[in-house]
Image 1 (cartoon, helix red, strand yellow):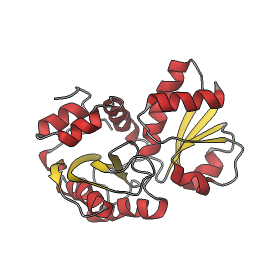
Image 2: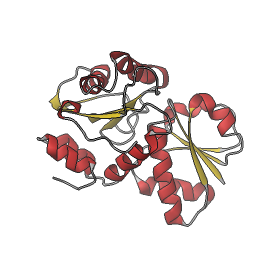
Image 3: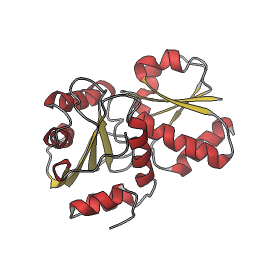
Image 4: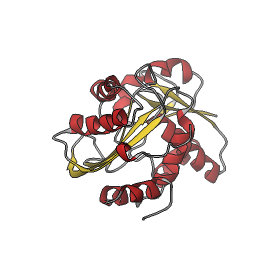
Length: 150
Length: 90
């Protein structure tokens, strides 16, 4: 699975969430809207944090919401949500969250190529603040493609 | 040398950590096999590992292990990964 082209419906800019559950739900809804998952996957992503804590906040300002592959995943997919107001996930180092990425994969092994591309984009320390500040979907696509700051 | 990255599902964040750990190891000139796994399989996958990379949330749940458990705060910070990996195995 390479990084899927981000459909317009998979990108939500300047959204508002009352709490971390709401923030994950926005990323899950974007995956559902783009046809990749069912609503059950969104609940599974929330359950991961209920079960294991806010470890999905893997870098300052960034949450990588995901759950296991399963019948609630119809295709490999990615969604990007930027928050108008940062949201606390309860992470010891990386709060507050400004950007939530939703990740869904049909098969466990297939994730890795997409994940490697995500890693490429985010190894640029400016990528998360740039995503948080993005005002167009094309700017988001450019940043995630590793194309620097649009 | 075997390094295992651990997260809840074994696919997303542990995958990111695997990719970045491999890059840092290459830069440091260290050779190791890096495997991403979920918490449920840590006993099996990490039985012969020297190092476990994970988030602070999983340290308690990983349980008794002979491996060095290293907590990574920022998965994209190659300086942090580099310093912690080099301290453990360099």
